[in-house]
Length: 462
Image (tube, rainbow, N blue to C red):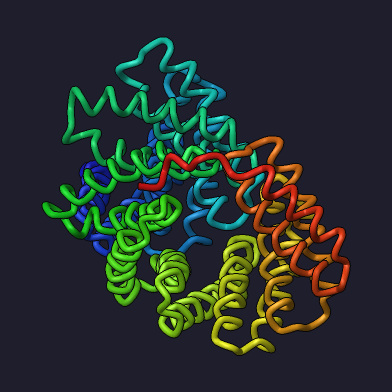
């Protein structure tokens, strides 16, 4: 054992990576756990010789555990890896800083999964800072990892509501990965597709929907080809890009195609979640919620309600275990569910669902306005609309609409392309409520403003 266990651990760790790339994630986790067990024992006897390898296996174990949906254990493993590598890098930066940056990137992902988004952003920013310095000295060696940390930084900045910076980071990641994929498609196309998917989200947030759709369509095209060759490895990412494509096609008015894309995403994610609920149920809930919206737009309201109710059921269970990670998505599904219940004539239930969504978003926005105020405004509009349809408490509905309109007025100054349309929708509802309350002059003033300030032509519809 003494002579061969170090090599056995290295082989097991490499096997774990290769099994994961092949989509055989359960076997990958087992292999990495065996490697960590051996390396813990070796490092206990000789830290100087074996701690670097233990840190490598711990960071890999964190990824494998996350893939299996065991997120708390994944975070613990990654924190241990960062602790070891930070100590090693303090003594020898040239040898250990690249690995420290890798573990910090992964730690950012694990912290985000746990809902600890501020800490996640801090870890990811530190990783990017290290990789930028390393890539400046040796681009060939460090640019792939710089791109990975930049794409993660884009997600973290978006979660913090810093959307302009998020877009810049993601564009930089795509630029690097596009260049790398041109030289070596087999090695870098999967990562390029991942960054393109994220870029589509960031462009959509910025209201640049035509460019967002182009990026996401390219990602889907790459993932379809990769998943045809290796479904187990690439279907999860294909489903993610299809779900995003459905949203962006809907925004472009191409609703039939949007529905098809979202149905494909749900089909894949149902199958994945049946095999591994912990890993795939959060994503299944996201696709079900999106599907509910697409079905509602297609007039298939009964099916829409079923899909959204399933999303709420999953997200309520997830939020009970980890509120910080899952409450924002629960609130979104509740707001959508309320609209669909109202359309089905179940107005009392609709009021309950939309009120709960507003309550959650109000609490979240109090802690992080930049990240959650857009969704608070949206949920306020839905809550007010449900009350309008139910002919209940028009004064309360008017107050909610007024609050949403004020939020949207502020957001429009920053990102007009994204928020002008919801602002106009909120103003239209405000005018309807004023009319119902007999305040004709105020209602007409809003409607006159809407007539005199039409939306600019939308280049995304065709």
